Length: 217
Image 1 (cartoon, rainbow, N blue to C red):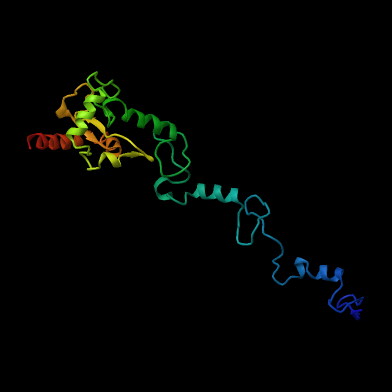
Image 2: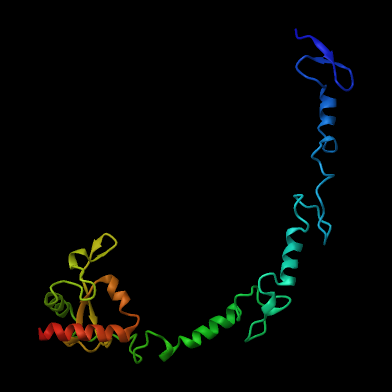
């Protein structure tokens, strides 16, 4: 049996492996007895809420309100507080915008409607394809183009959607679905078919030049 000796504080007899009894050990580990203890965590300067660290002066809520009040990001531009929407006057939630989400959507929608839309093609964007635009005609155009994309040069064997190989797409150069003249049709891969739907003036001039040299050559 291990020899006993008196507790360092209360002098009660304890085992040889300890210097204090359980009661005295607990009292010695109290915060006020710890040399690094700073008298408890500080409180928020604004609301008095108990904080979770010694380095903070305000709680999260009061610190956020204080940052908004002084405008820490763009105080010189907007003064105190967030700016207002230039259309409806609603208070914004940040400094990087001039319109609220609703007004921005309305404004953007107006700029993208009808002739202002970059994909607008004289009201025929949703038109149906001509009856002449049949699989036989598409096959003839692909054969004429040697089953090769006229934009990037991709072969039809490598034209894939996911893991599935698909035929090249036949594209209308002037974006008129009723104009099915062979000089107005060109073979493109699936990637280029999506690309040529934007910046249409450029692609119209590009394919017109390609086909003129191809047919004349």
